[in-house]
Image (tube, rainbow, N blue to C red):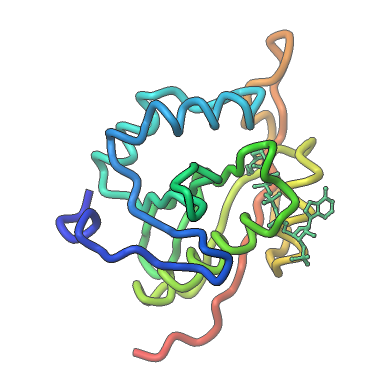
Length: 168
Ligand SMILES: CC(C)(COP(=O)(O)OP(=O)(O)OC[C@H]1O[C@@H](n2cnc3c(N)ncnc32)[C@H](O)[C@@H]1OP(=O)(O)O)[C@@H](O)C(=O)NCCC(=O)NCCS
């Protein structure tokens, strides 16, 4: 994790929800949400590795401190790779993903990224719709990228968002 990450002030959204750095101590709550949000969830080790690598990792909490969602992204050269974004099932459809995508875009711009990209399961129509409505466009397919039921594999759809010219 970057030295500054845990010292960054929280970002407060108009709804009273707050964006905060994800810490190791948050992982019980994160894993609980992850396992309710995904049929093939990340493991605790996946989160630990991402935090140890210093990737961007943010939690969205409501005004009472309840975990609404989170995202993790890997910075690269002039690009940001969104690795995971999830909203608790009981809080979906209320714009929380859009708020986190806004925060990700702002963080990516701060890091002089020109593009954000991601992979999403071909069958994940909801997430693909959310990204498309946000402005991400489908740019390719990775065949048999994800594990699927009964030992099958599923394609990933590649999507990207151009952030426009970065003022340096
Ligand atoms: C995908 C996910 C993160 C979306 O979170 P969310 O908080 O429900 O999304 P939002 O409420 O911010 O929706 C964003 C936009 O998509 C729209 N939208 C939301 N659900 C939709 C649906 N089922 N069909 C069509 N549009 C939808 C919203 O209306 C909103 O559009 P708008 O801003 O133009 O009004 C959430 O469903 C989730 O956690 N899914 C499980 C984990 C997952 O699949 N993550 C993505 C992995 S690649």
